[in-house]
Length: 116
Length: 110
Image (cartoon, rainbow over all chains, first blue to last red):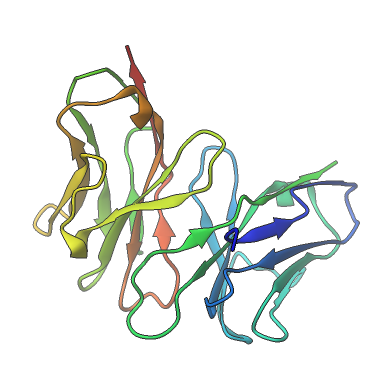
């Protein structure tokens, strides 16, 4: 297992276009998180899945954003009608199932979005 | 509002000098505190958590509930410690989100 993988690593798009990012978590992890990171900021929480259920969404996740995890394995994050303010690094993380959260999130390398 | 604050954007020290990266939190109840690190061209990864009371790569962090702080310390900095450090908190009342500070860039020069 090579850890959490994200695709694509880089995406350049024009304002108004739709983009989709994919995250493949570590196979035995049932918890999956999406974060956004802009220059000079720490990772900002977007949404959380436990298996296929989306249990929490940040207010940062506007109605142009949608995330899915259809079979409790990989996840997708789609941004519709992109805006220049969406330009950021989108990070996916996963963590172990069961019991109390340990706080150890395993991060992917991120998908960098540039909206022109 | 629940918040993690790292007051320093950049900290530069000489090799062998002590290091302290500051973190303050504003949370109701008793949050769990963590330090994450990102080395150049690597992924963000967990460095240590307060509940484990562990020392990792010579770093320790003490939770001070009175001052609501969780500063990261190392007595003798090494060049390989140069990285971006993020303090993070998990509150029992804050759902599933692990909230991060803005980070401090540590530069250790020879």
